[in-house]
Amino acid sequence: MLAMQYTIHLPHDFTAKAVRERVEKRRELFDTLPGMRHKAFLFDAAEHIYAPFYIWENLQSTKQFLLEDLFKGVVSSFSRPRVRGWMVLDCGNGNPDILPTFCLQESDAIPLEKNLQELQEEEIKFQKKLRTNPDVYLSAVAIDADRWEVMRYTLWKDKTSATKSTHDRVLSYDVLHISEPK
Image (cartoon, rainbow, N blue to C red; front, side, top):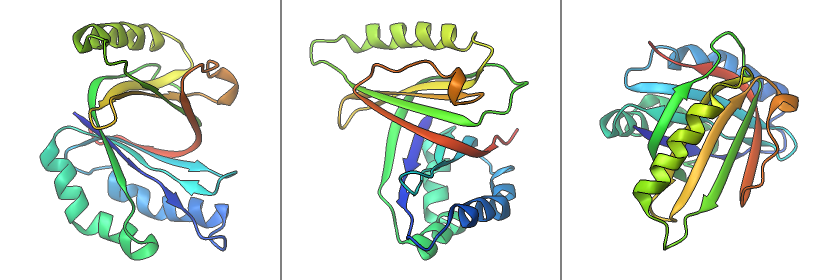
């Protein structure tokens, strides 16, 4: 699996209401998208950033999305954003009965001396335990092999239920919609 995210610093005249309306119009296009396991429509109102996050089953599905009409819609509306990518080490659902409204994305540099196999085992163990929290909808951990960073992605019931982070880089977003084709 591959994780992917792009961030769009929205024009000042593109209101939060306009973001929500765009998500409402486009979300159905992703609810049945082949090869996509998960998409969260993420928004940071304070920074005025739209930052959708995807988990793809394979590279072919990722490539197909980036080269075809859905992504062309992003490019025609906002210009072509930089797309980050990660190799997913673990991804799984927590409590399916909640509707997540808050996303926490945490990153840490991987020390040069850290054994990557041990890192993977530790992170998978941590993710499995995290998903037992009744306020966690989904969690994933992935590696950026270009920057040698580990990235943890967690969807929480709400901001107050999220655990306090102590990681190097922490981003938080409102979750506007989740698409998870079956």
